[in-house]
Length: 374
Image (cartoon, rainbow, N blue to C red):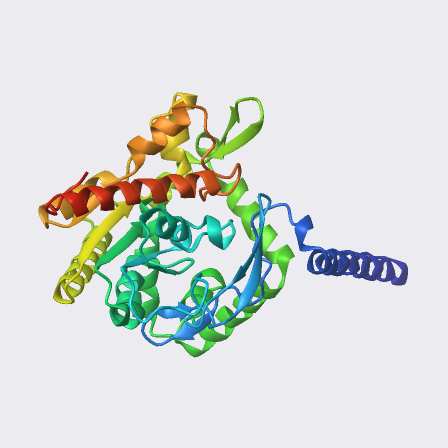
């Protein structure tokens, strides 16, 4: 019996030691992480009483995934601009990681390219992981002071409805603190025991890469085979990972009459009213996801989650710009517009967004502005 106990103890000890060594290896060499797992301890930023979370002013960091390693430096407000910021801007761009320029150098982020193409002063207020409610609050907190003539909202329908639902749940929870940490690291509740257990889960997910990998693995194994990602061989050079099942899950609420759809519309309408009250114009740009653009090359028929919201905005006389046609045409010409595994545009995709927005601005400067989809 003693030998059995000793054997079990040694087995458990060796397993724990192996896990500890693997965890240490990932912390020392984060580029070894096989999936798009965050490698910056502070990448969820700091808590903000109105917005929920923001990046720390004048901070820097590194984002590493299986597709890229991005070093970024933020301005005096905590956004992806070259400081110092102007006291007034012609254009303010609001959105999530696609506006931030996730995955590319600052010069390749599309608001920076837009500034060069248009010759106008452009301030990037993109916040990684932000929701439509946060877009409104970012404009209230940072955008209005810049007195822009044009406010461009980068709307990523592939996850903005999901993000809106998560932010609403965080508000209802009453737990406060950093919203993005709550969303990504365990979601502690206000009740004492639930709060304690949630903080324990939060700490494990935040600091242990093996726990993050385990969670991703469990989700992958629990998926139905029919919803497994597809791999598209693009021009014999790169393999594009397309996840139609995940897209359907994230956009389930992108339908008129759905409470989350209404929540998103309310945020955008409130933003429009504020912008117009400040003497500016709001343009909502629909940035497409890679599944919408590339799944047709596999014979798939992906949903277009931005169609319904675009029509609803038109009815409210809010100007919109749909980028699917331009992205489809570029893809059909053989261009790779997204990272192979990560869902964000690559440098070429970001440039295409900037070019389309610059063309819209040029058209509307020459003509009387007429709201509606272009």
